[in-house]
Length: 341
Ligand code: HSE
Image (cartoon, rainbow, N blue to C red; front, side, top):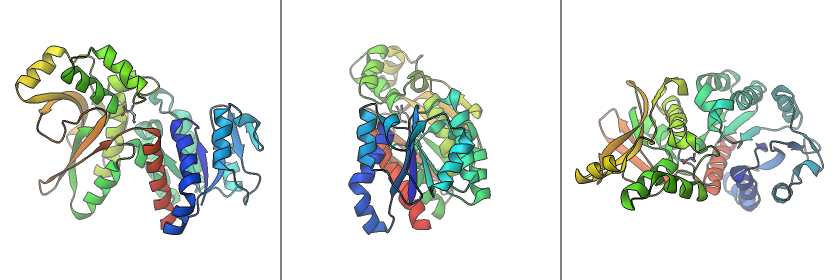
């Protein structure tokens, strides 16, 4: 299976490294050969020389780290319009376009157009960019369905923790009726430090940025928009609610005071940024939850509860961010697509 990796940040580079280190094992275990045939960052696109040629993933990573992606053989400036890029990918026999470009909810039009152009040419899409999904998921799902091509996005919610796969699997036996949980690691880390060590908000945010949890623009985390993007993805993928981020009622954590945290603690509760989705609507807001319950996670850990039609509740917890973790979600998606062919 020939793939194009768009975006050479932490996740894109980790995908290339995993292709190099796990490629042979994945080929023998699942019968899916994964071949890198194109990459891009914000400045350059590098394409394999023909539909049977391939790029060396480790050479790509080394070139990126040396700031020399644009000087590799097959490189060209990144300014190709989406439809032209999709046409080139088709000529090179690329089966799946992997979008690891950074999420920017205010600038999602270009990556959305790029994904639609790929899907229209029946090139599968794996995305860890949340922007196109948060703003145009109904249209993207419809384009994938219409063109009978795969659109996967495991890494957008929960990083390496298979939150979406859990929801989809549960849906096979019963119906998931509601989803509730912590889907943003940065705000969880901040609230946790404020509660357990009395850190000031700004100090905790700076530490979360240092640890690499926060988005490039951390206001997306603290004002709740990253969680809103994720709840939109969960609602569409698991509950079948065709929503976009505009339909989410969003409150971030800037207004959470040390006094609110202390009075929650006195009542056996903790304040968490809770994302919720059900037929009643999509919300993101700080809420008091049981200190002894599954949503009281420490550090940057995510936790999501699925309520089933029987009334049962199933929870999954795990790391929600990180380059290698998110890249592992990309590999899961690629193997899923490869084993369906
Ligand atoms: N900024 C995000 C978080 C990264 O804190 O959860 C993973 O999407």
